[in-house]
Image (cartoon, rainbow, N blue to C red; front, top):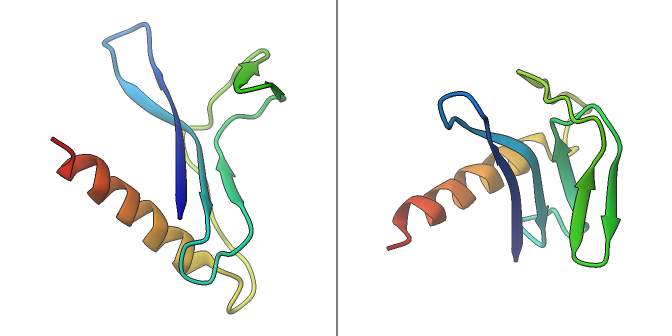
Length: 88
C-alpha cells in the first residue's frame, strides 16, 4: 500500500492545495493510479518533481465505465485523509 500526496501552499493566505494524488496496491487498484490537478508538464528528476508553468485546476471530474475503479479511488483518498488526520 502506498499513498503519495503532492501539496502546495499558496502565497496568499497559506491555503494548502492538492496538486497530485497517487495510490498503489489499494483494494483492486494494483497498478499505480494518479489523479493530477496540474495542467502542465511535471518532470521527475530522481526523487524530485519539477513543475513547469504550474496551473492548478480548481475542480476535477472522475468518470468512466462501470468497474473502472472510480469508487476505489475515492475510498483510497478517504483512507489517506483519515491516516493523515489520525497521525500524531
